[in-house]
Amino acid sequence: MSETWTLLIALHAAGATLAVALGGYQLLRRRKGDLLHRRIGRLWIADMYWVTFSSFGIQRLNPGHFTWIHALSLWTILSLSLAVRAARRRDLRAHRRWAVGSYLGLLGAGIAAVAVPSRLVPQTAIHAPWELLGALLGVTAIAFAGIQIAARLRPVRSGPAAQRATASTRHSRP
Image (cartoon, rainbow, N blue to C red; front, side, top):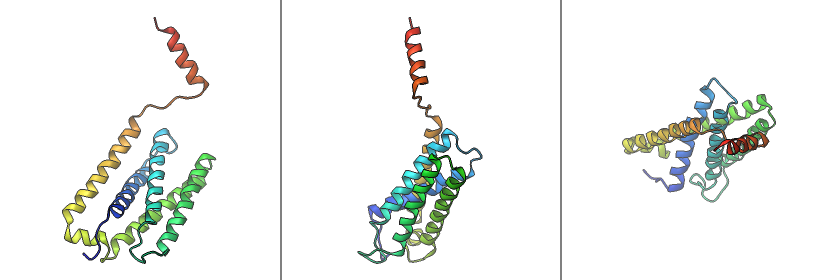
């Protein structure tokens, strides 16, 4: 292998793999808009921002220069931001379009990363398949754990109703 894995590239690849898993889970879930969807969506958005911003530190194709891949990262940052904005405004059609579009872009980038035989992922699959499999299983386990934790967390109550409920239980104790 002429290129080697750096910590940045490994964390970028792990983040992208995690984003594929979390985003796929979101798309395959029947129920949308509930607390679990919002929690996993926040994890996915944060992870996607990590993946896009970390791509600017990877300059293997053209060292020291901005490439078309970085232009796609800028587009992804914009589309993620618009997906969040649409969700906050409760514009669900726009949110769905921007979020699904970002996910499809992620899949396209992933295909590009593995389709070129000289890139790191295919070379690692040839020269260190067990390490690659272990990394993929590890990231899958992290995604599964994140989903399980998000599903088990209790809802955070805030606002006047929560304060009244807390005050009433405080006064009713002997």
